[in-house]
Structures are given as C-alpha cells and as structure tokens.
Image (cartoon, rainbow, N blue to C red; front, side, top):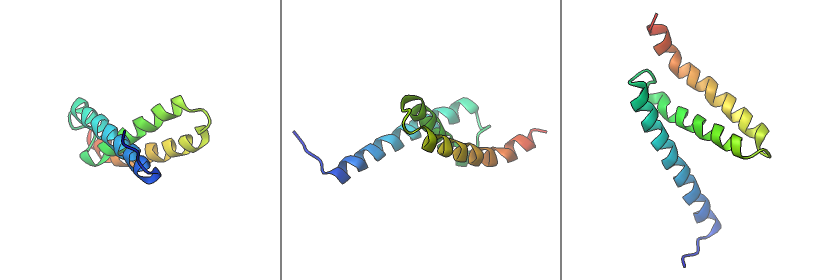
Length: 87
C-alpha cells in the first residue's frame, strides 16, 4: 500500500479536481459550438464544480457562494462580447 504525505495527498486531490474541470470544460465547449469563448470555458467548468460542491457541503456554503458569484461575474465579463456580437 502506498502512503502519501499530506502535501502529496492535497496535490493529488487538486490534480483530480483540475482534470474533472478540464473534462467539464471540454464538454461545454463541444455543446455550445463556439458560443462560449475558449478563454471562458475553463472558468465555466470551475463554476460548475463549485456549484456541485456547494450542493454537497452545507458547512462551506458562505465561502462557496462568494466564489460562485465571483466566477459568475468573471464568466459574464468573458461572454459579454459574444452576446453583444449577436445583436
């Protein structure tokens, strides 16, 4: 059995979360067919992860709500040129 130190364990968790974010970002990019710019896809994946984590953990609700708002505003700023170009 392989035992990891605390920092290695945390790094593995962060790597796993980033891989899941990349997977979600790839799916979002494919489904939106270019509506979501490439720069905003990673942030959208992180926003989805934050929403899923918030749904699962009530004790971190306030911190996650703040992070969700920050990422939603950032995503809106990234999407604004695409939305305005449609009109």
